[in-house]
Image (cartoon, rainbow, N blue to C red; front, side):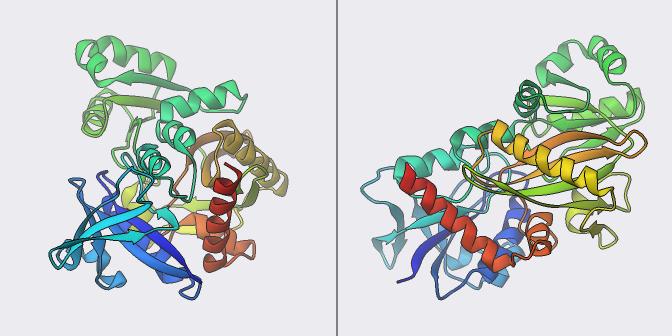
Length: 355
């Protein structure tokens, strides 16, 4: 008997469109003999729908018109999706949910908390790991506590910037220097991130990042190579080989990640083998430091001149588009996209049975 698998996509974050792309790839690679797929969309305003149209049409954006209005009640006696069709309210039971959501109100523990209340097993990290992994400042502090190497950074709020712009600018210049990256603390896919080379660019970068979050981070821009490692598992996680991102742009921004055809992914990364093994070990340590389950992608900075490695950040719901690193890293290790999805769902069921 096939599992009733809800695939959650869309969401209220700035990564809504990327979620649609990831969800299409996930649903097209799921084994239809094993899973009865239930596509569940969330609009940018937070409205829930049961999608009935063609999966490949999702990225076009007009998916709501081919959907039924729905809600997912936190009451565990339902354990499924309520939707409204033909003037009646109906219940769609769900055995497991795959949240293919990126960013706030999807990857940050909010959806995970709802699914916990509803007593529905879900793929990926739990509430604590999701919320801490979403917040770059909290993540860095946990990495520091675990003794992991991280790049120099300063954290500050939008309110403090408006009140103490000159003093804070001088503080960042003294602690971090130029160039530096200014980032929203709670967002992914490089949304709202700018590389600042001087005071004018720093102010513009903070103004941009402030549109996305009230908590911001300034991080030293290291002359490095961007490398990533995928982690899979619950209590005994495994690390993939290491991949390298080679963008044509100055850094791996949103455009380079998803639309720039000149961006190249090199698997395995073109760095010494002993450094690849060191990164794999650090990836597992970072995964455990946040108490992750299921999956995560850990991003690193490799400073070639010194051969130093810095843990950059951890993504509890990595991209699953046709150009995303997470599934490609496991494919390079001999695990196909479809088999990877099977393993993630098996890990989910295993974790919820243990609980």
